[in-house]
Image (cartoon, rainbow, N blue to C red; front, side, top):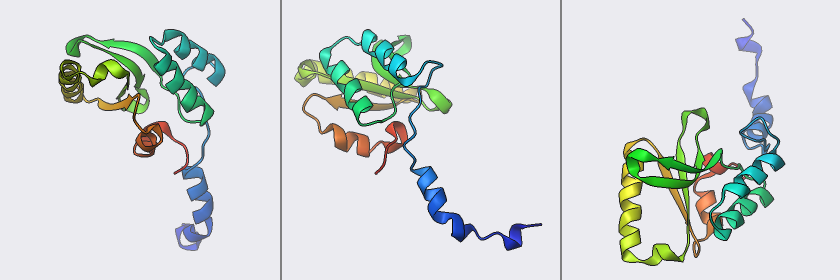
Length: 144
């Protein structure tokens, strides 16, 4: 009954601010700092730890889990985002991913994961991490 008297344009800026809010919580019952510590303890490399700290310092969304093995694709995800029914596999690729045989294996694993509904994001040691995050704001959050 009130639809005719509501002015959705008057609240536009408030709704846009809410949509772009950078509120960071932990995807677990633990607080953000504890969750970060748990993820850091699971890392296999300094590059993975650097990536997590990068996200944390930028106040971006932390992964839900780390070092998750996907049997069907014979791969261990460095990190995974799996809340709200969206599955994102994140790899943090060091210099050994520069070799052709590793790149071929990476492509096979990516294809397999995509067949299972994962969105795969790779952060290489030489990549512009800001650009990758900017292209995947739906995963990492933050302001554009």
